[in-house]
Amino acid sequence: MMVDYLVLEMNRLIVPLQSEILVGPILLILGVLFLVVSFVLTYWVYTDAQKRGNDNAALWALAVGVLWLVTFFGGILALVVYIWDRN
Image 1 (tube, rainbow, N blue to C red):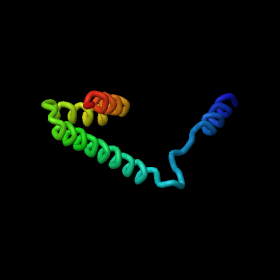
Image 2 (image 1 turned 60 degrees about the vertical axis):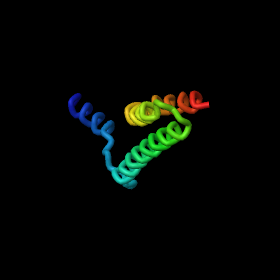
Image 3 (image 1 turned 60 degrees about the horizontal axis):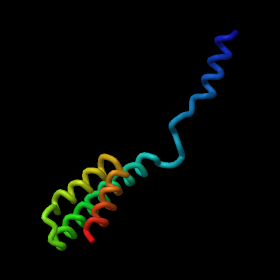
């Protein structure tokens, strides 16, 4: 009797991973958007640093791009530091 009660309670806790919303395509679009933004920011930092005559243009671009991909907030922080340092 106790086992039947536990099974019944456990079945209530299980939530299926099915949804009416297409989660797979949405996650794919968000992932691609994340990569595109990373590449765009890396390119912008590199071209801006070169235009301003910064000798470390590639280093700034790699720092922003890699940190954006590895840790989102690290990329934002690197971008803010670059914008602050360029002036």
